[in-house]
Image 1 (cartoon, rainbow, N blue to C red):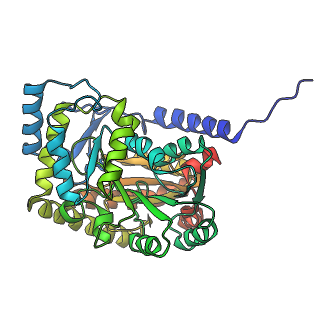
Image 2: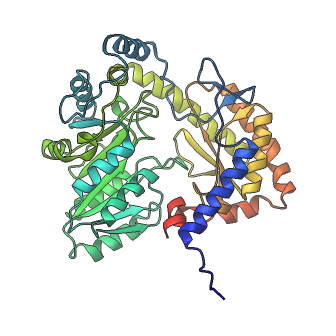
Image 3: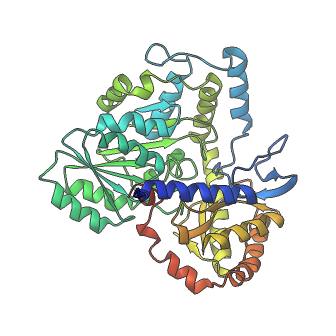
Length: 435
């Protein structure tokens, strides 16, 4: 009799993801379609029903700012829908001004690419040498984790450590520092799932202590809503740009436009990536309308207007945190960020709760495998300046009313949810797939 080979962990994960996607798509939780003829940021129409929208990453709510719309419209009229050339040959006339404005914001040279995912894939293989080693936070964004697969093809060692564990990081630095030329630590500034922060000051201290340590931080979820001139959480947490920091970010969240941004400690690294980066050489550039929109947003960020936008959002973040706590809702990774994760434990609890909330007039995201581990399912709720205090009250009060009912329906309780979430900082969606 022919022996049937057991499935690999990878295939098991793919099978699970497929099953979850089939269930959640059928329920109308994922792969949904916005039906609005015009978007206002506060509402979204799904399956014919208008709902309060708590699923946008456009935290500042400036995607329809008149100056941004005007700039994009004018560029579309004068330059058309695309500029179909590799930047290695010629760049759209808008790029020079955009990158000069980003340099003014960050005080360092910056390179604009089509997306931050492409940015990671473009620069990490250039920065990390054959004699280097990489240490990555287990909750680093998938775009960073995917880019490290290119390093593994060159037999570069990539290690993964528990989330925000600086003690473990230092232990590994001590062990590796005499074995490798450079040690690269890869992490997010603001983590996209739970909204918690990287310990920037502690990382700077380690970089000062160990010459081999270099920092590579993705702050796309921290950009615009915090930091001087909207430069993000990393720039807000520390008083200076560390000489060994490679800060990457993007314009697809609170910045209100599109594209990725790589910033560099000096001009030499800027030239290296611009000259040798595959994303710069072989990919078509952003449409002129998008670059023009980036310029307009940069000017907003460099004006006093950004302070009012930031203050407005931060007051809503504080209100959300306090309201959720008063209602006994379990926020994971509670920070002063516009990303909130309310743990519910079992996937079935999440399914029913999301459907109840949709029926009640609310739309937000369910975080379930592979975004989180199976029993660490939660509600990922994001906040923008479009949402009002009344919207927040309505959302959280309805959620607090429904949660105990749904938990009871699935023979669980908040104590069990707490146990499921206890070790949330050591798990990762990708660790479940790749091992």
